[in-house]
Image (cartoon, rainbow, N blue to C red; front, side, top):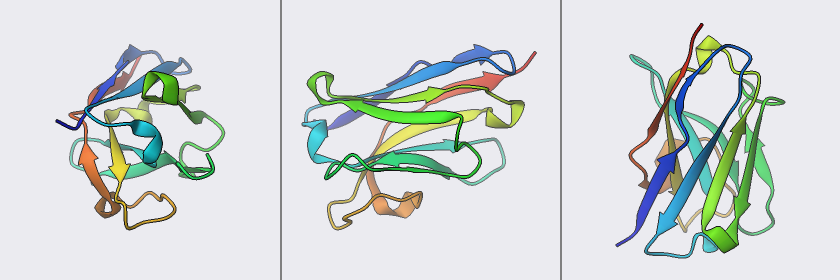
Length: 126
């Protein structure tokens, strides 16, 4: 059974850091481009970063560019999201997802993604 599990969320003070993990089971992650999304209460799901399986190229939303870094460790079947200089506006549930196989390059569009994890809560507050 194909499954994605996010972990690493929690409560952090403004300016702090967290590293989220997206672990895959039931399939080999390196064949897929992976996206990270977040959803705050009352807001739409927002694409914040993705990494392409073909060449390792990455995408970042303007809101996180320069602060977040996406990476993958195919040996561990895991994709990471390193989040630095966190702000209260980063508070949300964070999800990872696999890009649909009909798409060649990943983007921040949720509709292009097939399989989703359950999410991990990130709260940035003093």
